[in-house]
Amino acid sequence: MDIPLVKTPVQTVFPDLTEDMLGTIDIRPAKAGDVHGMSALINHYASNNVMLARGPQYLYQHLQDYLVATSIRKDTGKECVVGCAALNILWGDLAEVRSLAVHRSCQHKGLGGDIVRQLIERCRALEIPRVFCFTLVDAFFRSIGFTVFDRDLLPPIVWAECSKCPKFYNCDEISMIFQVDK
Image 1 (cartoon, helix red, strand yellow):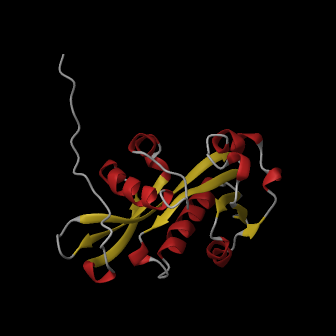
Image 2: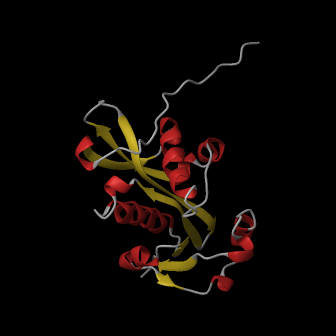
């Protein structure tokens, strides 16, 4: 029996990517062909201990949770991932923003905020009243309307994922929440 192989072009985020190399940036639901670019972007920041690493298997399994920001490179004509984030639904009243990453050449231009606001709109459409995040960049999330809150108020389902984190016993992240229904 032959097992079909899926071949997708590998996308990577190049360290030398600059703003003038990019065309228009679009935000859309992630596709299977985006996974390698998402992984490269997320893991670039994870290697600097800014966020958790995400490998291709995890990203494929959670693909429907992700939005990506993509652009066509002017020098190659190929699409590349320049931003991403996921919305993880935990319960009927709670979701989490995960894996927010924006390529350094696209930062401070509103792209991260646009991605998070689209995730908040997903919560609104799904009638999920609260979305939270763990972050090291609280000023960014404050600018969108998130507020700091006590992580001990989160339900046990949150800690199942947190227990896999290498920072579990010494977490330096700030917990923030957004009330979608306001």
